[in-house]
Length: 112
Length: 114
Image 1 (cartoon, rainbow over the protein chains, first blue to last red):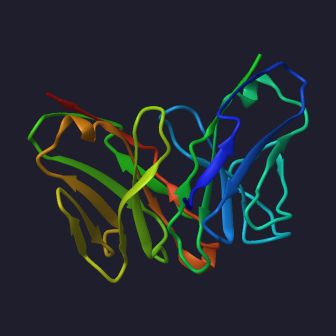
Image 2 (cartoon, rainbow over the protein chains, first blue to last red; image 1 turned 180 degrees about the horizontal axis):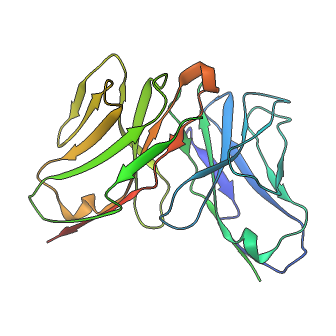
């Protein structure tokens, strides 16, 4: 089934650790996005990509980095996790030429 | 850049009543306005959207209206049911000029009392 997947769904990690949040979509979409959201609160765009080898920073400053080596894959990396990074991270994708975004199930990150 | 304001932040209605959520946007170039519903612990899901060349769109119990002159759009839910309880987000997009990015409102937490 065409969908957008995120792993892990939940992650508890200590301060200073390097983490990578995975996002994959099987919908053939060109554009992909990462949002940060505290539960039930506003969605903040932190990174987006229009296609392979394209990455841009979003409206909210973030210490994370992203890469887009394959169309279907858009991982987000935190080199050194801090408690301020505790949040939910939502990945989304959209079709070329269209604005409608489809969201993954999210990763809930807790940094101790 | 675009700025989207959403009101109210919380809304409680009796089952069967109507609910209305309002959003205003700042950039007159915005031309696409989706609404997402996010249930507790779930991902945001698109429930309805409207483009700037249309004033109103309806899908069963939900409808969206757009006033381009005033730069505001609203979500209307009629005959509310407990399963409508969720956080609702409006958004606006300037289309290609902004790279098809969406700017989201701050969300409205809707509670439907049985």
